[in-house]
Length: 615
Image (cartoon, rainbow, N blue to C red; front, side):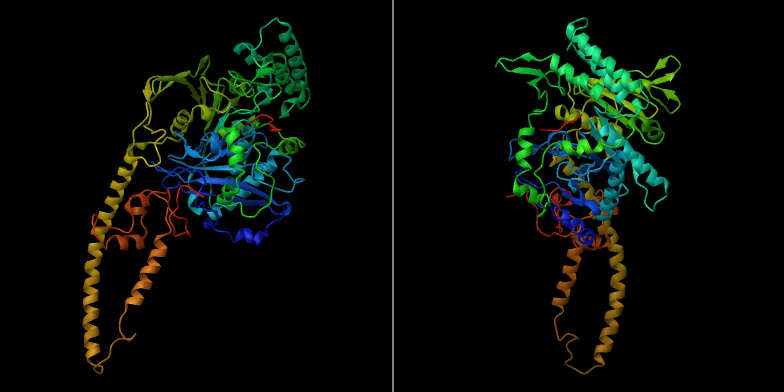
């Protein structure tokens, strides 16, 4: 594997990361996206891969969500293509829109983290060996990424993910807070964290294996199977009670509880082969000993799609030689466990003092089950209280949540922490209910679509509707386009009227200049035809060309008068609205818009799982 010189990396611009086409994408304008590698460890050839989608619409603020999958060592392309990204795979070559993707009102960026995960790479003997090292490299990634894309640095920033990302996310959040406290020139606006079915507190999660198995009916108390598992749990508790036992993220004596549950509850399937419960969704069965490693079903499409040469080229992989994409890299997981890291739950009280957090769980998940998350909350002290106790003997209520007329789960919140339980959902909640998780995200970000239009979804907590949000709108939403068109027209009229005032001044100045020129010209000999010997058309063309180049560099921001650059306003005043402009309404959207350095239109169509705790 060849490493690129750091100077070559430094010379890259945003245009080098622009995705011109995406094989298998739906017909129509391509969503605006960037992808590629950012070097985080020059000494060891460490590079993180990102895939960024710009928001389809802007509500009341600019927001960016970073999504991380877990593992450790599992790729965030799971999140991109099976959970919250704008596309899902219909087969191994065809993408379709994800109804409920998270990019409606927020930019979303998927990062294969840490190095060695997914497309990210490093020298194989240089994988990170602690969570702090992982967080430090992620800060380097963000620093360099914001240099490439400075327009996003002042967005409200959210970090989201699932499973073992419950360790990654708090470490990264704490690193951002530490960076901000050092008073850098640009502080990053960390507005919130979202962790789904998170592996956050091992001392709460390990004992919850048995509790959940009893509650869900996987095992029955008093049976021989139950006694064997209880015996293993006792060994686990002894290990956790030893010195520093509570400071370990992984304890092998406790990992065996889950292994025993899966082994002792297996049954013979219709085909005569042994089957076990799917640890990520107990409603399902899988072959033993996979027990969920073959799930979700979309995975059979993701791996071949991400192996296609034209896809790699589209995502700006270039000629970098690296192993083929795999969902999870067990070597990364093994390396990060070599050096002890304290579990992230110990950071949560400090983070919650400044940053709101959402913990959400799918109730059918065994491996990072909701009982463990609820025990974490009940045992944790933060912001002057313990658990969801709001006053002595009084706990924050569990508020029922209905979504489009169906029971969806419940909300519970106090002192900057929100807990959401999703009924009938697995370890990968967005895989099951992308629309509902989008509603959760929009509530958390306090998105209000009242100022941009769009049909709000019917989402109620205890029968009450919050801020109106729109879930699952098609990227070419007619209503959204009409709203944007109204704003664009309003901006054009404002520019037109404003230009009239400016034009009056210009006319006066030009008249005076013309009079002076005529007077001066008459004093010269007859037959003088101008400085350039005649026509000025060539010069005029060059001026228009220069102006056009500047206008091809689309800026972020809502379609209001204040969003136009001076050059754009100059062009707008040349023709009144309704008599033709240099751009269509569709061009004002980010979908299908060009890169900062591109002039051509982008078309939609381009020609051992190793899981510790994750999918």
